[in-house]
Each structure stands twice: as structure tokens, then as C-alpha cells.
Image (cartoon, rainbow, N blue to C red; front, side, top):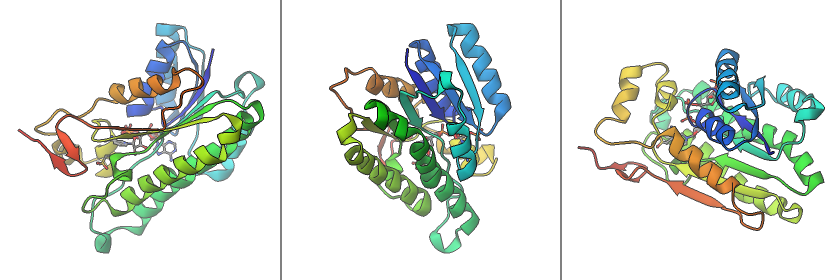
Length: 251
Ligand code: NDP
Ligand code: 8X3
């Protein structure tokens, strides 16, 4: 039975990954900042699938907390087979000359540095065992840039570059490194980007069918369920009504 560590499991794509990996019989370490959500999700997965869950309240921006939490995992939980680096966010949608540097810090600290801290803490075990998989959730914003996306796009380009670098560094140890890059997925992402403005967030998805979090979770499971000699390096998954980062077929 695989042990899967999912960051950002309290909502959206991370929560959907928890659902799918639980359905497939994995045991889960679920982390995020909102402990109440993790508790509710853990209880539901245990009830519905009999899943063993270790909820872990964690802010991936907090370097010392990340290393302490992962080094402090009980022995029954410290052999991690699959790491899903999903925690991430966007803050604001402004031209660079009007951007808020505190928003930039939050995005860089979460999407790049948080992913690095968690990976650095988890991957030595995979290296020692010569097995494991790291699934990084990138974005279409890591493949293209769009107006006003400046710093968010830069963080996701960094995730793309780090994924390629990890794959090279971990090649001798047989560790599979995968990136999944979604286009627009309707989650809490836009509510967070617009700092609680639900009306503005809803408009992002008006007039077309966006991806559902489950679509990405099913893709993550597909990569994890390939035979050991197969690695899915890179998946770019778009809504049918989205042709590029900024081109939509809205009705
Ligand atoms: P949600 O806002 O629904 O979920 C984001 C998750 O990340 C939450 O569980 C949140 O938990 C967690 N998170 C955010 N900051 C931190 C932090 N500092 N420490 C720990 N956890 C954190 O958005 P999505 O599900 O859409 O986003 C998941 C990933 O998918 C992100 O990396 C995002 O960039 C990426 N993505 C999203 C797309 C979309 O259109 N929705 C498209 C492409 C990529 P909590 O607040 O409880 O800490
Ligand atoms: C989230 C999708 O297009 O808002 O990564 O950047 S987008």
C-alpha cells in the first residue's frame, strides 16, 4: 500500500487528489494550513474508503516548520512513496508596475520556496530507498505568460524548471518526477487570487466549462499507476474551451 503525501489538501486539486488516491487504496498524509478542513476530509475518507490518514497542519512557507514536521513524522508514516507538491496560490492580477510586493513574496514563498522545502525534506528517503515519485502541480502559467500574470507565471515557470532539474538529479535513484500543468480549473484559486471577491472570481469561469479538480486528480493517479519503468514527465491539460493561457471560446 503506497503512502502519499499531498500538500494543499484542504481544497481544490489537492482535496480531489486525496479523494482519488484514497479510492485507489493509498494511505495519505494530508497537509495544509486549515486544520479543520483536513480533519473533516480525513474523517470522510476514513468513513468512505477505510483510508488511513495522517492530517498535518503545515504552512509550506515556514522552512523550519516544514523540516521539523517531516523529520518528526512517526515511523509508521515516514516512508513516503509519492509526494504531490500541490500547495500554491496566486495573489492579485495587476501590471507589474502596480503590483504589491507583499503579494509577490507570498507567491514566491509558497509556490517556489515551499515546494523546495517540502521536496528537500521528503526526497532523501526516496533517494535512500531508490524509489518514489514526485508529482509537481505546475500550470499553463508555467508554459506561457499572460498579461498581468507576471509574478504568478514566473513562479510556475520556476516549478517547470525545478521539475526538470529534479528529474536529472534523481535519475540515478530511479525516482519518477512528473509535472502536471492545468489550464483553468474551477476551485478556490480565483477567490484566493482576488482576496475573497467571489463575484470577480466567478466571472473567470463564466461562459465556458472549466476543468474540474477531479480531472487533474485522475491524471495524477494515471501517472502514479504506470508500471515502474514508465515515467510521465509532463502533462498539459486544458479545458476544451481554452486554447492558450489567455484564449478562451466563451459563449
Ligand atoms: P485552491 O485555492 O482551491 O487550493 C490551494 C491549496 O493550497 C489549499 O489547500 C491551500 O490550503 C493550499 N495552500 C496555499 N498556501 C499554502 C501554504 N502556505 N501552506 C500550505 N498549503 C497552502 O486552488 P487549486 O486547487 O486550484 O490550486 C492547487 C494548485 O494548482 C496550485 O499550485 C495552483 O497554482 C495550481 N493550479 C491551479 C489552477 C486553477 O485554475 N485552479 C490551474 C493551474 C494550476 P490552506 O489555505 O488550508 O493552507
Ligand atoms: C492557474 C491558471 O491561467 O489563472 O494556474 O494562471 S491561470
